Length: 463
Ligand code: DUC
Ligand code: ZN
Ligand code: ZN
Ligand code: ZN
Image (cartoon, rainbow, N blue to C red):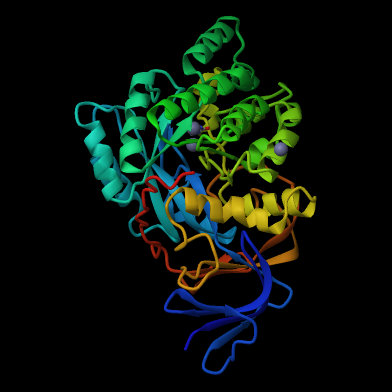
């Protein structure tokens, strides 16, 4: 007695087929047309796509940052994710300087416990290797934390030096984990920022104007070079500019295992449109890397199409405008960096990618689900529709119209970065391990039903 999803169009990264999907005990048992319905609970998916649940590999829930804490916790953040068709996230635990990674992991498990509505993995942000950091990385890998984020930006807060980066890379070349890099030259940017403040340039737009794309490209190039010397792969997070993309493409063309993600905000928003430099409202778009000039957008879309970029994630890190962004009213450096996005990723990439002809449906599935599952050690349990995979499935209505707005979104944030954006295509039903958790924009599951996902280190399987 299972769940039978009938007459839908099954979309994976590799194929599009008219087929039924039989689910039993939370996993996919059969994918073929004409499965007999007797004994099963049948759901009619005529006119709908059946997609593997979205995977958002970059979120910051309940994260202390910039003198405050990101506004969505594991309950509100994962519920909003589910409503948007995302059934797995990988969030960032953060090692406080001078403390053990183990205690950060415990802290993040506690944050998620009883709250997560979908399955979640964890990356570890390493701020300090201390005396046992390299062994602690191996310990984390045994706990299923198969990736680590390092910062080349935010001096004195999160930034680590090249020696630390290189040692961590050598460790991952042995334990098979993946280093995720926030690639911006933080030292150079800090000088430019201090000079701007000294000149009285305090408005939000100066956040963007003090972080040149070359500072991103330089760090991307350096990160990949260090990885190459260490014999380790490199994953660049939230890549935002053509200059930075050129570095990734050049490395990949040489056969180097370099990977990169971008985010909807870099594909769809720009300095010209969102940051004309007229009001503090622009603090809504203060995140790092910042918004770029519009001319970068077609380059990023092209990168997604041709696999110079592999993943779209959100970097969801919401701060309310009224009581959090306002911390930086008189000084853009005090605006908490980040924006809300976990709910709208599939809608935005489907509409602006697939509907506009920039991406095929299969590539849409690949960059929002399959590639992050593979890169972050969750495949084929997650990220595809195949016998034996978890039944994380989205019944996607390609003709449903929706207008994105803070008035109706489910994220705990008083504004939307995409306010008023109209999209065609939306999740109608969402299943997590075979359980119907979302229907027509309503979350139906139990709070806290999400499981921690132990992820596999990929070892030598990168090329
Ligand atoms: N960038 C942000 O905008 N917020 C959180 C961390 C980061 O790197
Ligand atoms: Zn970052
Ligand atoms: Zn190209
Ligand atoms: Zn981030």
